[in-house]
Length: 569
Image 1 (cartoon, rainbow, N blue to C red):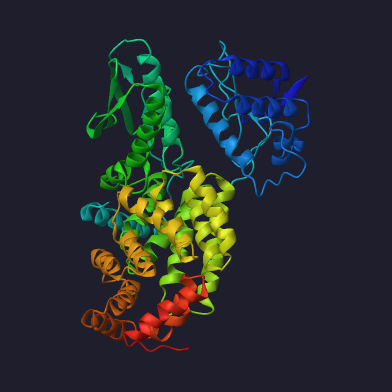
Image 2 (image 1 turned 120 degrees about the horizontal axis):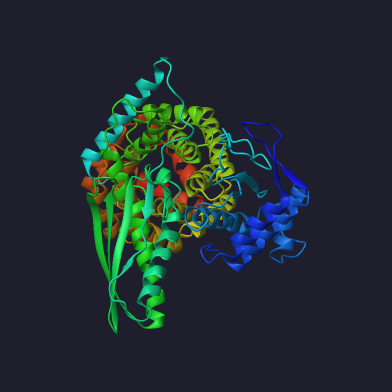
């Protein structure tokens, strides 16, 4: 019995089913296959069902019931357990084939967006054999459709403008197979002490860090890469561990590849009791992952400084995502059209680029919420476009938190608040170290009436985010305002100080009016009347778009009236 496969060299070639089963057994028996028991059962189930000719039966529901023991009432839309475990299993397989399975003759993988495994011929060729021109698969994968430093921000924005012009030129160019995504190789941390348990601690710390980094979908994390993959690695993370009887110290650094320039380094200390070690491992992994991989983190800043002459398509598409974060530093409306055009071109060239779809959605959302005054026809249409782009991102990568963030935001603006908060909670559970998501989810949670919980998340995001802080400071000003702490609110809105953003002035008017500072309230009011008269006339709709509870809307509008602003009822 043989498993049918597609092969670019000879259509209709096949891989023996027994060989596929042997490969499954080899993976499950390998100590380097870093998967839980549940993930191993998951892999066994989908492989055996496929090899038995029942691949069409493999659905999230069947996996949940037959592998995870869920009852017949399981709802895959409400419970993402299968999608989450599938993501973990994909990464475990990728790590296996980069280490112990590097020379295995058959590769088993689970395509993103599906649960039916694929099988491909891999490894060394026999003498005289022809190298296949394409990777054969048993089941075709589903069709894909889809700085704090001002100098860094300015550079990335300039890159976006240049790329937009460059992409409009119709001269023929080679099309890359996918967008450029930074590859980070994580070396096993070196054990310097050689004491009992120190090697296990070094290995455990390495794995914790890899797990944390892998949750960020804007980078690719590899361990023990093959020579081919190694040539594409742009950054290398390494470290060393020294352990005494009572304490340990981990020294860790990020280097550029191949020149070895140290871009970031840190030291971590902790006690060696079992309870403290477990907490230390988690804390270190969270800190390293957030510092390096989040938006505006070390890798973003390093990439934003890179200048690539005559950039190929793959780099140009990735540079568009850098330009989005640079735009987001101050929401500069003049730059937004070029960022949108760049991202639209990116998803046109690479329709499977989930992050670009997500950032395009967020850009469309900004057009809707910052396009003062709100257009009763254009703004809802933009939100619908944004929701469609966000759903495309999530369809391509169910664990892409930027796509989920965009979906949450679009649903919130559609006033589907419960659905929006459900998506936000799910996204934060997938990657609790993504401060960009944390801040946006916290802000929406607060403005939907859960002020304590939401504002706590915004404060945490402000503390940990490496990017420009003004957006979070404005949010914390709103939080203090609704708590009735107007002195604190005034402190935060002064710190935010983003005079080009009209909504900053709206928030300031309300705060200074309630704080009894008539001079500042009048100054902010006069700025709005002079620069944004249409926004002033439409303030009721603008406020209602953002806040959920009628009492919050009424209180905020009363503060604006107290400052002398007049607007349509």
